[in-house]
Amino acid sequence: MYGFCFYMKFNIITIFPNIFDSYFNESIIKRAIQKKLVKINIHNLRDFTKDKHKTVDDKPYGGGPGMVMMVEPIYKALKKIKKTKKTKIILFSAKGKKFDQKMAKSFSKLDNLIMVCGRYEGVDERVTKFVDQEVSIGDYVLTGGEIPAMIVTDAVARLIPGVLGKKESLEEIKGSYSVYTRPEDFNKLKVPKVLLSGDHKKVEEWRKNKGGI
Image 1: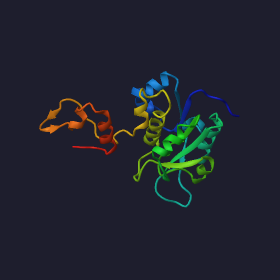
Image 2: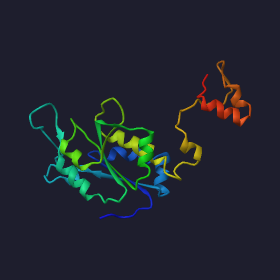
Image 3: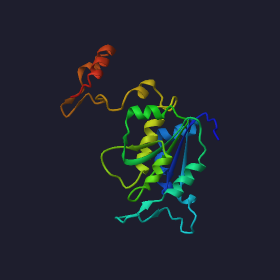
Image 4: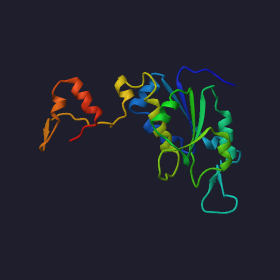
């Protein structure tokens, strides 16, 4: 069944639900939640297990090192989360498509982004049959998908109208040009004269050229 929402929902499936508390309760993300521009739901995967030990992992068939997250709890969690017509389910995976600003913009058009955080040696391959896309945040290996979930949530949330104060902040990729503040001269490292000129056209041209020291 589909529902309608007035804000964007981020649904995160994880075995470490408390890991998100500090980050999402600070700064811009916290204000976005308070303004009801976004809603972040953290789902404890262990709540979707059927044994008393709340087991979410098992040994892989065919042998091999480590443990693998089982398909059934993840499937049950995905079934329980209410979907909207504009919902996308992603699984964080080293073999997924690399996350970038273009992907962040496409995600920001959704009503609901569901993220599955893997752990251990990965997840049962059958989980990929229940997601829309596998996503990687870079060419390196992490211990789990929780940090990628924070990164994606942050990058997408800032693109939602009203989350950031200035339109310029929304449009620009932070760090795309050099920025300076007082003092004008620090240890003989001076602020470029064009930034002190008051000529907004020249400043804009300088920024487009990604000026530096």
